[in-house]
Length: 550
Image (cartoon, rainbow, N blue to C red; front, side, top):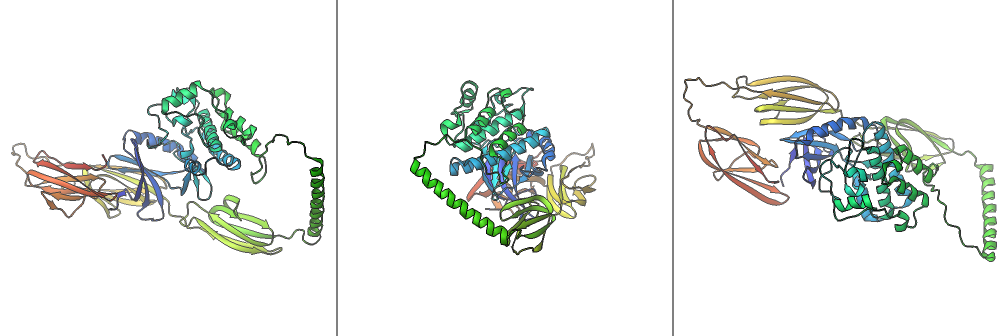
């Protein structure tokens, strides 16, 4: 199968498709380790909406648990969103694979989700489609929220409701089916978070149905089954949190993400490692007297052993520690023996017992994202460990439009001939744009642009053409330029049965008259072809388009 490019990205594989978007995994052609997810929006009306949403999402860049938008590209008439690639699985896949998740893991995941929601809500941004398939767990176990404000492709098995009711029915709040200007989307997100916690702990959604209308009616007119009726191991306090978040009336739910977070913290306890769950189990049946005697004897032996160890420890080993001073350039997340010591730090100290320790430092922005080193501490030793990451230079995007078309060069490099528009991701700084059309009155246009980090610069160039004298009789042209285009690009072209040297898109010269144009393209191992007969004359055509994806 031939390689396919979208802008400066080489497509590795197609991972989804729907009525609104096609989704691809791709890598940057100049940075092979830079993987992204590309969403090609087939509806041009959505492009401006998503750009406005991305402007809001720029406010959320500081939160480490949000999947970031890398930028926008143009691909023909389609808008392309480049998003951060996260190596891991979705929470939905994890639930399908493992069934019910443990209490501690479920509370940790939902706590991270609610923390993201609290951060976003404070900045006036709402997700509106929280669900397990929009929650990623990366290979390091970290939670990442994806599709923050971006419409999901219609391949979702839970059916995305069209129109103004935006969301996924199984996780939508009742008021979300008929939203108004007064709908509080913060409380909608809280409802979805509670539904997600219910699903993790029970292995099933609280409301089910054959279609979105059945699910909607169930939410509007039926009561949810209490989670403890599905999984009796769920603590009462956790059930109360879930039921409050799933209240039909928005006013009876938690009134903010921070309020829900406080309730979760109270249940999870205040232990540093977040593993203490404060639950009150039912009273145990009375213990036989003989068993009580044995337990008391065993407890006494344990107390004696612990006391002896403590005396020995404090007598000869009190205070035996070493110190590691860890420095990170420019910054990173530091882990010692798989425990997080600091996030986004430049310098941090670790004091620990003598022996072997594994230091791991992670920086998502770096080329080599993870560095690790094993050290041995001795009593009163002080070790200095420097870690330095290589950060790729900042980039921006240049969007170029030529009307009706032109040969486009950036910094002396030809991007394509006969193009109407193109996009290029470039390093920040000064760039020279040159657009040529040899048939135009003014055949060449020059421009200089200065590109800042993450900036999108747009330039448009229009060519005019000399008009023939009024008294001149227009004659039949000897040749006519016709652009042959295919979707996807890179198809072989045959004109009147003869294979051409250039693949699509390309401008071919045709003599006036009737011609047979055929294109062939191998897609996912299957060779496809399309054929069309065109009549070339002074009135056209200028372009022939073949679409293999329709």
